[in-house]
Image (tube, rainbow, N blue to C red; front, side, top):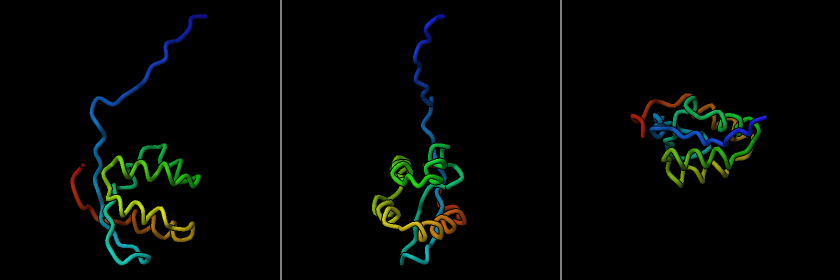
Amino acid sequence: MPESKKRKFERKIAKRYEFVKFESEIFDTEFEFPKLDMAPLRVVEALNTGEVQKVSKWLEDAGADPDAIEAYRDLDREELMDFIKAWESGQLASVPK
């Protein structure tokens, strides 16, 4: 049986994200995060399994504000569900970064 070569698949062009603005009842300021429906599948999987470090890494890579990411990471599970609802209903803030 022939041995297969290990390949690394890389995008030709970096992924660009549209950002949305939204407010959460938990915080006193507005957030600007990439549209959640543009998240890679690995991030969606991480949200479903509670692996917030993967979501945080994606937010960082997409160019979200570090202080906003840190605030997101301080949420508990109950707060997270409300926060995600607000995030999903955010209004378009910018063209892809």
